[in-house]
Image 1 (tube, rainbow, N blue to C red):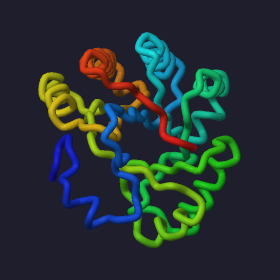
Image 2: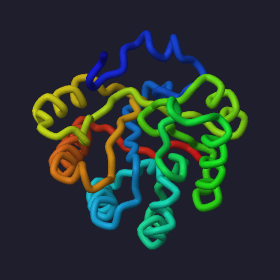
Image 3: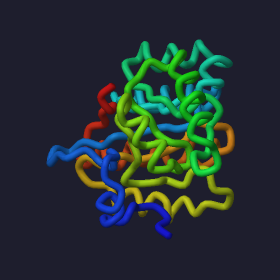
Image 4: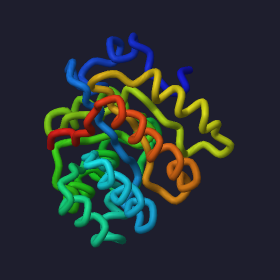
Length: 204
């Protein structure tokens, strides 16, 4: 089981998902799952602004309903958003009809053709249905910022050495990632900014 970087074979075994963007330009795609959250999403937006960076926020529908102001700030600052279901459902444990209905409910408040399955867990049947409407976005690099006791040094090293032009990186703007994210995000942005990279949002 990989920890931080997706093995090159996995996208071949699971085609039909966006794992990274095909480019030779020095650009990275930062993505944030599970928000919006009043404290953490605000921190992320403030930090991105310092580096003139754009990102993509895969939002949970119920959080958008709870915190509409921070959701509208994401849009106002020209970041992109994606659907992350309404209740953060695990596709492996959720019947097809319920999963699609939950995604449709989220779509009422999240206007996007991007979708990321929570936990990265989605069945082939669910994917086949959702692909008709969405670009299904996975990732190239997982920061593991949600882990208690995470070695920040290991995570940062994996991000720095594993990222390449077009990489899609995953962070989480949620309460449980606060301690890790407040170290990982600024250091990631600073390191790649100095290397001449830019940070773009995925196209909606």
